[in-house]
Image (cartoon, rainbow, N blue to C red; front, side):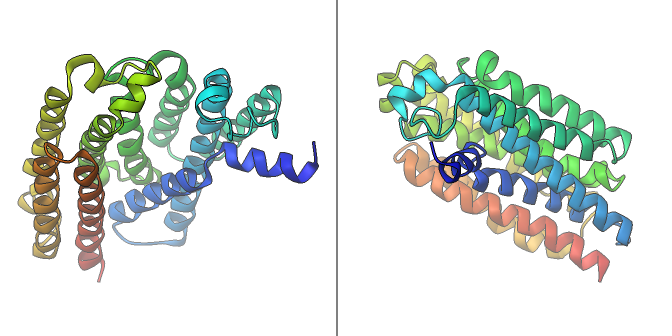
Length: 282
């Protein structure tokens, strides 16, 4: 085994695109929560982002460790089954990433430390305890996405400002995860997985996703109604709501198109929060 292959394999274990994306969510949560930007706030936001990215990478690596036997059949190109990384090295690497995340998190406010602690436990327990439970794995992933926004807000000492974004992010992510499971139901059934659509049926699962999205859409005007953000936020969030509502409707006919549309709606919603905060800081 060459050193270059091993290093590349370790990087692949973290699923770097996912880790970086998680770090960006923490940045968004921190920016949305800013009252008066300062150097200290900037450092705190970057620390929260790095913490989130390291923890996510560690979670991905330990997920590969636990799934190594399944991956030999279902995903043989992953680093462990193809021999680029040994199971012991993957476990040790995940531990190093988690330790790095803990070290950074301890420099942040108490609430941020508490959120980081809960998330680290969730990331470690996901594969062994929750991944195989219909709907529970979806809910945990959704919580982790939402909590990344909240973590960014907590890092600058203002979690309340990012709480609505965290809740909407979690609800939208849950809906997208369920719709994606409907899209993948044939392959998942062949692999013996117990996703929500397999357990309760595709149409019922789509209704669950639609209800989650409906709650998110109904709650989205809250920052404007509570006068947290001005009309600029509303101008952007309304199109996001339209796209997400249509995505839920479209999913009943085409889950692939529905979850793709939902991704764009979620992106617009995040932009709405950034625009809402930016107009207050100008």
